Amino acid sequence: MPREKGRKVVASNKKARHDYAILDTYEAGMALTGTEVKSLRAGRASLTDAFGHVSNGEVFLHGMHIPEYAQGTWTNHEPRRVRKLLLNRLEIGRLVGKLQESGLTLVPLSVYFSDGWAKVELGLARGKKSYDKRQDLAKRDAQREIQRAVGRRGKGME
Image 1 (tube, rainbow, N blue to C red):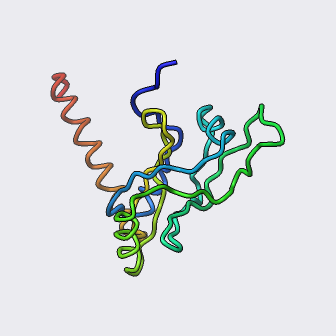
Image 2 (image 1 turned 90 degrees about the vertical axis):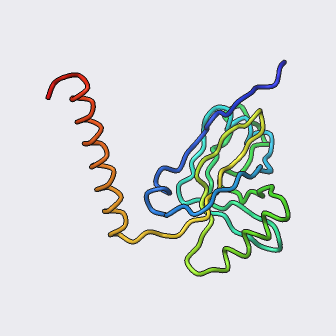
């Protein structure tokens, strides 16, 4: 069987981009069991309330929910277990240095398969204030209105 190519997104955390200002992104592999991989391939995962944590020079993902595999037996996994993330030592060192700053956190942005390997995209993030969120919504609405006007003008409606 040929190895699959490309990137297949399993789950994305849309709320993270709304609640946090993403300063930097990292791609990390995940240490998973067999039934977790099968459940991910079926497209079942949730990143709500998930976060990354660095301890003892290793990065872990807490709170990610991968439901039990339907055809699994007694070897099935625990849905919300702590999963180890696979990063280079230099990247972990860089992350530790940046996480020492106040107000920064590690947020998973998406889970996907890249050339057959399960990966997670982590964002180094700073929480937004409520007025920042309102400004972002206003900018997005203004951009949408501009695009509509350009589209109408291109069609000769105005």
